[in-house]
Length: 235
Image 1 (cartoon, rainbow, N blue to C red):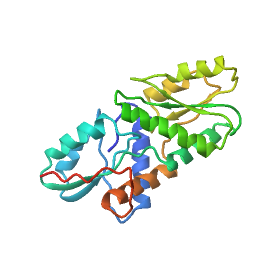
Image 2 (cartoon, helix red, strand yellow):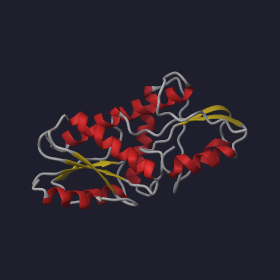
Image 3 (cartoon, rainbow, N blue to C red):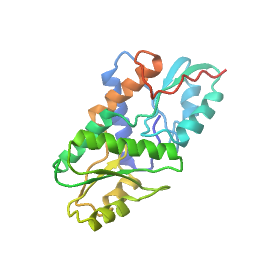
Image 4 (cartoon, rainbow, N blue to C red):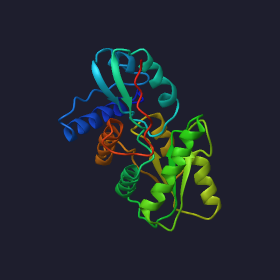
């Protein structure tokens, strides 16, 4: 279940990521849908399925879609036995992907601080997830410099504000790491936050496909996880 975007490159990233999951788990039937803007919607996708399904959100935090939209769609899918996996983030596999994207952009571990630019949410828990991801990235980078969480909408500081605050502290080299699934409006906004460089979004990094499979297994019950939500079986 991807968020959905009008950006063709963003749609292509979702399709390519789903293909990577299919290649990783050829034993499974893997379908995809969108929670907003694009078809098939979650409701349309559920209507075509039968039996037991595992719903894996291709979302980096547990915001409105996870708390409201998905349960509402499941409440109308009485013909299914459904379980909902946890959102992808925060997780060390995402820290691996963010680290690689920074390295690909030419950023060294001790070049300076990093601003982690997440989408942002009106849900404090979703923003707390982004802050936790910043801490995981700080550990993964093993750097003497900090990783600051920032939010592209609905919360603060914005990436531009975080970059400005770091410059005011005397830092001359600052990287912006988009904590985003793919290209689109938010990725373009992150690129204009004023950092020395901006890494690419997570995209189709191999760690994301592994994490999708892991969340599936957690929901199925094969892997224990303190962060996975309880299964949801509509009645």
